[in-house]
Structures are given as C-alpha cells and as structure tokens.
Amino acid sequence: MEQWYATGKRKTAIARVFLRPGNGEITVNGKEPKEHFMTDTNVMKLYSPFKVTGTEKRFNVLVTVTGGGIAAQAEAVRHGISRALCDFNKELRPPLKKEGFIRRDDRMKERKKYGLKSARARFQFSKR
Image 1 (tube, rainbow, N blue to C red):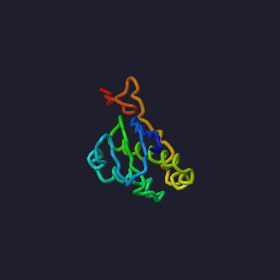
Image 2: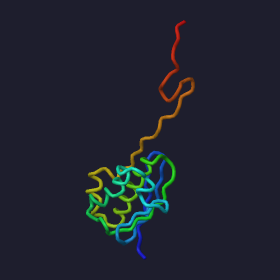
Image 3: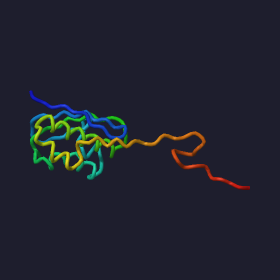
Image 4: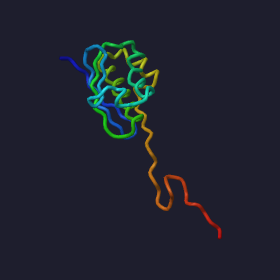
C-alpha cells in the first residue's frame, strides 16, 4: 500500500501525518477532527491544503499530534499535510507555497528573564 509521510510543526506542537489513497477521511489521534479540535476554524485549517490543491476526497489522512495547544496542533497538522502533498506530487508545491502552508511558522514563546515578571513585563515600581 502506497503512503506518504511528513512531519508538521508549530510552536511546540508536532504532527506526524500519513497520507494514503482513499475517500477523504481524516483521523487525529484516533478521533474525528471536530472531536479533537472542537472549533470549526481549527477543523477548516486541516482541509485547506486539499482545497488549495484541488485534491479533496482523494486521500485518507492519519495524524498523530502532540504538544502545544489546540490551535498550534491544527496548524502543525496543516503543515504536515502540505509537506506530504508535496511528496506525493511536486507540482502541488507552488499553490501551497503561495498560501504559506509549506513554510514552518517558527515563532516561539519568548523566555522569561530573571528579575522580571514575564518575558518583558516588569514588577510595578513604587517610588515611596
């Protein structure tokens, strides 16, 4: 059986994505996407690479995702699906790249600095 594998990342979320020829079913950690991601916005992120490339209902997707929050996990899955589609067919890369799905969003949380409340916030200053 032919399948394509890719890893998608966003913040601290990591998604392992397996694309297999099928009828468009997506399984995330053994659940339906709506059950795992709760909101329609996050579920729409999963289907967007297929809509951009016109490959809806052609693949079954099996996803294992860990780390991060729900929104970051959804974007990690989208990144993984996009990369797997590129492995399947190199000609799908330009439309995916144009939408920004290929590039890994490498923004991370800034670390807390010593002597401060958080990364940049300071404790309240009292003159007296």
